Amino acid sequence: MDAPVRYREVAFGDDAVDTREHAGATYVTASATLGDYALRSSDRLRHWAAAAPERTFMAKRDASGEWRRVSYAQALAGARAIGQALLERGLSVERPVVILSGNDLEHALLGLACQYVGVPYAPISPAYSLVSQDFDKLRHIVALLNPGLVFAASGSEFGRAMEAVCPDGVELVVASDPPARAATMFSALEQTVPTDAVDQAMFATGPDTIAKFLFTSGSTKMPKAVVNTQRMICSNMQMLLQCWPFVAEEPPVLLDWLPWNHTFGGNKDVNLVLFNGGTLYIDDGKPTPQLIGTTLANLREIAPTIYFNVPKGWDDLAQALETDRALRDNFYSRLKLQFYAGAALAQPVWDKLHASAEAACGERIRMTTGLGMTETAPCALFAMREDVHAGEIGVPSPGMEVKLVPCGDKLEVRYRGPNVTPGYWRAPAETAAMFDDEGFFCSGDAVKWLDADQPRLGFVFDGRVAEDFKLYTGTWVSVGPLRGRVMHEGAPYVQDAVITGHDRAEVGMLVVPNLALCRALAGVDAQAPAAEVLAAPPVRDFFQTLLDRLHGQGTGSANRVARAVLLAEPPSIDRGEITDKGSVNQRAVLTHRAALVEDLYAGRDPAIFKPSTN
Image 1 (cartoon, rainbow, N blue to C red):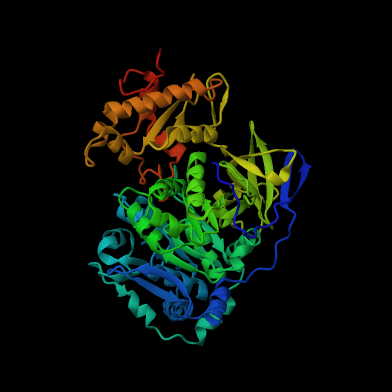
Image 2: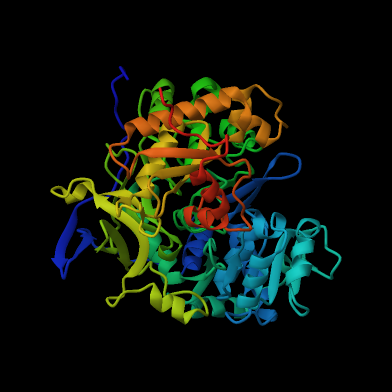
């Protein structure tokens, strides 16, 4: 890029770290200490309801397309009224609230009410109700939690799931379209008159109070309920504030679709707004061919100060920003930070975004990321330097202790701090297995130093320890970096890839193609079946060229891709192969598609790609 580059004057935290070695492990902490944090999230709701009562806390488009808004004063009043209704029903940690539907204002108010009076709640992936055909995971969740109340926005959409998994005696609550089974309307909860018992319950909550249960993806086993306490949430927001002090200078404005049943959207994004007096516009769009247009339309109207997305969403947005000037000018009009998580973001996407920012405002807007997980609520590491590049994940947040433990030829990162979960609900054996003898949570993620001689430069993500495998020669294959290279080289037609080769002679891959773009490449109708699309000569030519390039780039058997097959059947949420955010679970795909892996190495199927001989 020829244009001079400068960054917005935005305050970021100190990235200095302290390190020490002991018994073969390396311990890393931020040099800065963690400041005081709130006792409970409700303290911040009460603060902003007094300091900025009319400011919009959250908004969502209604059926007419207009933004329906909830102010901070209205959010507090709603939390107290609904909280009274929850107390009157005798709900508690033994009889919590389960929320089946996605992001909306009723979901937000119910969650605030639960936290206000100390009743845990569990937001569940809507796909478990709407996409799943057997409801096995949803049935497991309801049996584990024993909820006293189950909420869904639409009784007609979620009624089948509610009736299938909710025992008699569990109260069903809906915002509209009651199901066949008797249900309470959400408006009845809102109309409850609060008493002094509500505030007494609020002041009885504290750092150890369970705020919510967030479920793991359940890739090869049933999902586990991760206990999220008020201490976890409040300390994590203080960590984030010290990494991004600029959020205290101007209340953040977000347009966000990220699902609240995940820690990225439901903990980090919602609480970033709540704790700092910002505004969250709920985006009904998603990075899918059917819904990306909704996101782009919203971004032409709402100018965020921070924008969060997963890599697929950034890829879609980067392409649109190149050609849509109105979108580009509004998007960058007050943007201070871009952030991604959930998977690797290819450097070419960063470069497109930098070019679009320069075209719009003459500056590059900082793109950054970090590393965390549901069990850390979620933020653990942040990349804060201006010159961060794809793959870097930064340094520990203040208050977070990181322990690096050799695991084969990798370093597993382990966490200890106030934002780390005390464990999994009603799963003592699984909880004990996840903590080492010093109380560090074993993440299963691998990292490596960007430059071991300069610790403040931080870490690079190095895949999952459990995903890596050995070829039959004994050579280790590092899955994470290899998947990243496949997605980089295969953009934009590769959505993801699953690496194969355990106990075999060579590395292969199961490619998850971007079917929408492959249809365009093939020049076929948008409704053309996947098998027809993937057999089209232009598509075959692209993936053959990709395999040849990946094979040629390999420097040894561990990173030389020698065969590939395209997945005509997309990953399945019922089998745990894919999450709401669209990320693919390597182990689950390999488990459920073992026969396809056998076919890949048998090599007799003409659909299998092998390196060209010429």
